Length: 220
Image (cartoon, rainbow, N blue to C red; front, side, top):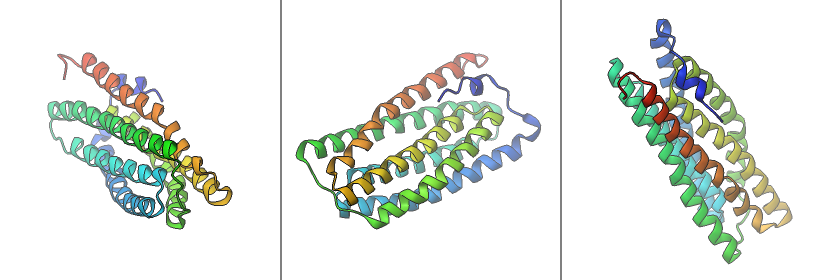
């Protein structure tokens, strides 16, 4: 998902405080929801022996960190502080993609190698279904707001939120296939298939931060 238009746009300064407040509200919701999602998914995943659920929960932890980063970014008061916070926020959000990709890769490959069979998890299925509804709405809202604010950090955060919706769909299909059809590989394979996308988005975030810094007068 490209964000070149965001790096070149000028924020709508006349309503910037209101837009920034809206961004903070979305970030607060992201932090709260993902904290709950992480608790349910990780606990359920550990009990069921499901790497897809645990990986999904860790993605929620990373999204929580991303949401906190966005809150920090929009607390910057002065323009030069906003530019520096923006650049650092993009790097932090980008780094979270690599952390998630590394963990999911290790655990998914281990599960495939040792043929670990997870058990069906009702709480895990419930949280995956709920996230499949919530995350696309939240991600699109962030994306539109990022365009209006010309915020690369919020744009990267919106991609991570949308990634969570893709993970929710893959997780839900895997849990159902495993629970109903006893396809043990349906748990690690969907998680592993998301890794290239995670890595690509990590590089994309760093590339956009570099382009935005080069485009800024005197650099950031």
